[in-house]
Structure formats: C-alpha cells, structure tokens
Image (cartoon, rainbow, N blue to C red; front, side, top):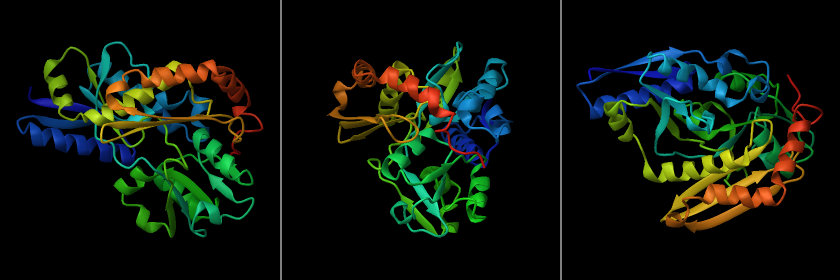
Length: 319
C-alpha cells in the first residue's frame, strides 16, 4: 500500500484532527503517503436550525461514510461524539484514540463563572444536554440556541449576543482559542456531564482491508475504547436520540470505571441520574445494564415526553 486517503470535514477543528492522524500514520508508516479528502457535511451547511431538527449528529458523518463506501477514502476521522451508534454495513468503527480532557467550559467577556451570572443572563448553547444541566442548576437563566463553527460562536459572544456560552474545552484548546477569552471556567464532570464520546477521535474504516485495519489499530487506546464502548452501549440500548437531553460519561482510573449518566427534560426538570463505580474487568455490559435499570424505572416514557416538548416552548430560543 502506497497511499491512504482520510475523509474529513472541513471545519478548523476537524482538519486539526485529520492532520493529527495523518502525522501519526506517516510517523509509523513513512513509506505510505497520506492525503485528505475534505468534505463539507450537511451539518456544516445548515447553521440556522438545531442539530436535532436536521437529523442530529449523523449529519456530520454521513457524507464521510458515503465517500468511503464509494471508494473515495480508506479512513474517516470523526469526533467520536458525532458518530451515531449505528454504523453502516461495509464500514467499521475500529479504533478510538486516547481521550483528552472531556470538560465543558464556561466562556464570558463579563462574568468570571457560571455562579457569577446575574439572574436572567443569556447563555448560548446548541446542546439540549447542556441546557438541561444549566437549567437544573440555574433555572433563572435564559438559554438561547447557538450554531456555527467555533470562531462564529466566539464572535457572537464578543459581540454581546450572549452573556456567556458553553463549549467543549478540548476543541478550544486544540485551536489555541482559550487565550482570547477574558473569563473561562472549566466545569467539572459532576457539574456538567459530557456527551457520549467527548474528547476522543473515532477511526472508521472500510471493512475487508487488513492493512488499513492494522494501521487503524495503531491509533487505538484500550482504556478510552473501553470507556467509550460503555457509553455507546448505554445510548444504543436506551435509544436516546438528539431530541432528548442525555449525558453519558465513563472514566477509568487505576482499573476502576466511574460511569455517570443523566437524562431529563430540556428545562432542567424530571431529572434522572445514576453513578456506578466498578472494576474495569466487570464492565463489559455496564452500559446496557445501566440503560436497562433506567428503562425499568421509566426512562423511555420520560424520553418520549422530553422529545414532545424539546422543540416547543422548552426549546432554546433562536437568535
């Protein structure tokens, strides 16, 4: 094999991720040329509607997967949080890179922290998961929808369209954008539980190519793979779509898994939370087991009701 083609979105963060993987492959396999197939996803085109109204996060991956199935790429590099639990036939999510800091971060030009926001302050986020957790803690806040790439969101904050916004820390750090924000507050995992797969890269390949599989496996971090498999099990079993606020995060430390999940209404009410601590060796089915426990306690009805209200009065206002 002389050349590998990586399918990637064209956002600044996606390109950073793709070039990072390109460099890693070229370091391990200097005889192989790695090129990028830069693709504009549907999720990058439609910026005036919440993700869930255009079909959810799969709109960030579909065009890349179509390119692989058409023979136009060998590998796709995704932000794992954007990868649905269903993988199309002929493709395989074969590796997950070592996860970095998973925290969300509070950003403001006027207020030092979430606690310092005055009553009725306007906070921007496109995530129903974040909205649920924000309003559980601060029901007085006014949450408004926030779309666009990272630079667009930061520009809207600077223009004063929001008192604060919430983004993933890892993307801002990778693009060296944190230094430009006067006030930042990294939110703890107990304060703001991340989504499935946050801060890890998913490596998807075309099935049936042993060399591509070998190369992809060199990118795999076993602990991160185990944690994200638990998260993906949970989301798949409970059937949580983008119309329902769901947080789901597993971390491993010294062979012990801590798995946090949370779901509820977008307005921060009807919250259900669970936290499990178990040895990694006993966690093969932990995601499914915890999903079943929550289903038995009425989670499916809760999610159905959450979906009904998500885009009515409880939906973040459009700017």
